[in-house]
Structure formats: structure tokens, C-alpha cells
Length: 391
Ligand code: ATP
Ligand code: MG
Image (cartoon, rainbow, N blue to C red):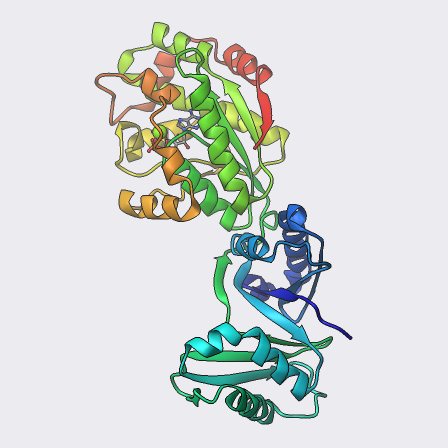
């Protein structure tokens, strides 16, 4: 057997804990991995022993990009770039000496750690480590073996089909495979918080339908494009996304013209919830995700959140609710949405902001204020005008 290429080993994270579901989680993860790598080359993707193997089928595969893409797949706890070789100690040593040349020449101490999931292999783990360690020492005389605090650990894994050599894994995205935990709609504004909340819920295995409300001409085409760009960035983590763009102008004008100014934001939000629920029902979604953050703005007091969420029977998930803004920003930077989020385009809510919003709205007062509107017709018109765009 000839091994031309290096490959990727994806260690399963929490998935491993799921007992009977494990098989379907693994299948889901393999399918997600295949989809993420589709444009980066031809790969063989298979799994055994809580690891998914990604093997390029030819030299055209972009392994650097594949590695980066795999770091963003939820359900993966670590990604290693490994060299596959024949299952004998000389081939393993030769692979380590060759494949890890850069690493081995740049450190002064190392150790070899071997694992054998193929228990029929003729050497024990310790014997194998000693053998490979000896060969590496011969090839790189400057290296010292240090079993306690080595600068580099050479990992050898003897598995069913082959042996693998790598220099340790990079922490993966963690979480659960997208799609293993049902679906939710996520209210995606152009702000900093909602891309983060979308990411956080996707990380729990939920597949996401982003919903954006826009109020042309009060909000521009650029604002819409900004949201599509955010959704596009999020596909790296969430997988394929189709954004539901909801025309919101008429609803906002009706609220502005017929309701007390102090309730504008609350009533607007309640319409978002109602429309989100219709979209959720159409798509088999079990929850609505928002970027609400307790105390951040007038519409995010407990009282306001209570009144906003009252008009939907679905659970509303607010994963950023207790985070500090700094922590949200750190996460936004990590997932790559921050720079786009801070582009200065108006959001539909900022266009119609009351001067003195109610921070402690009462439900009965809000219901009374809303009674001036033909809610069902407005919701239906907005839903009928939805445009769906692939991110
Ligand atoms: P973000 O940074 O996510 O915009 P924010 O702190 O600015 O959040 P608000 O603007 O009050 O807070 O919005 C609260 C939440 O309502 C948002 O996180 C988002 O989930 C939802 N939301 C607000 N505006 C829109 C919109 N135009 N389209 C879709 N969802 C929206
Ligand atoms: Mg906002």
C-alpha cells in the first residue's frame, strides 16, 4: 500500500457521550464534514473509533483550507493533520522522520506517545514508542528525549487500516453536530450580538434559519447586503443557510402612525416574534433565537423581554442574555463577524426609535396600544413578501 498524502483526523467531542445516538451523530458529522469540504477537493470520509478520517483522494485537494474548515465543524473536539503509513515500526519511524521534519528540527526535546486500537499489533505501545523514539533520535542527533515536558510530542496511532503519525491536535469547534438538535429560526440583525447568538445555538447542534427584517427605503440595500454577508460568514460554522428577508416597512409605519411612541420598539419586536413563529412553523423549527442581552437597551429589561416573548408560544433562546458586551465582542471576533457587524448601516429598529422608550412596559397597556392595528393582516402581508436568499 502506498500513502501519498497527509490526512485529517477529527476527534469527536461530546458526541461520544451520547450512547445509543452516537451512530447517528457520527453519520451526521460525516455528512456535515463532506458538505463543508465539497469545494476543496475530493475526499474519502469515514469513521471508526470516535474519529472521523478525512483522506484526500488526489493531490488537488487543498489540505490547508480543509484543515481550517474542519476547525469550524461543531461536534469536533480536535483536528490533527496526520500522515498515514503502513502498520509496521519502520514505516512508522520513516513517516515520523520525514513528515515531522520541520517540527523535529525546530525543537530540542521530544517524546513519542503511541496508542494501539489494533490490539493485534505485534508491539506494545511502550515498545513501539521506544522503537520510533530511537529511530528519531538517530535521525536528529540534536534531540533529547524528555518524557515529562517535551517540546514536541510525536503521536503514533495504530488503527484498523493503517498507522498514523502526527504532532498533536488543534482544539476544534466543540459543541454538537449541526442538525442533531433540531432547527430554530434566528433573528439576525446587522448588529454584533445576533450573529454571536446564532453561532451559539448552532453550536448546540441546531440547524438555523436566519430571519432578517428590513424597512426599505428607511434601511438601504447596503444594510441588507451586510446581513447577507454576516450570514455568509456564519455558514462556516452553521453550514448552509438560507436567509428569510421580511419586508417590514408597512408594519413599522403602521406602528409609528397608530401606537404611542413609548411602545414603538416593544410592539415592533412583538411583530418580529409573530412573523418568526410563522416561519418557524413552516420549517419545522422548535424555537426562536435572538441576541437579547439583559439590561443592554430599553427593550432588554426583564419586563420588556417578558412582554415581547408573550406573543409567541415557542421557546425563545437568548444565549447572549448574561454575557458582558466585551465577551460578546471577543466571540464575534473569533467567529469572524465583528468587522462586518460594525459597518455603519442603519437597522430597521434604529430608524424608528422612541425618544423615551418604556423600560418597564405593562402587557395590558401594550395590548391596548396594539389594538389599533390589524395584526393578522399585517403579519400575513409581511410573510407573503418574504424573499429567501442563499447565504
Ligand atoms: P444586535 O447586535 O444583535 O443587533 P442589539 O444589542 O443591537 O442586538 P437590538 O437591536 O435591540 O439589540 O435587537 C435585539 C435582537 O432583536 C437582536 O439581537 C436580533 O436578534 C433581533 N433583531 C433586531 N433587529 C432585527 C432585524 N432588523 N432583523 C432581525 N432581527 C432583529
Ligand atoms: Mg441591533
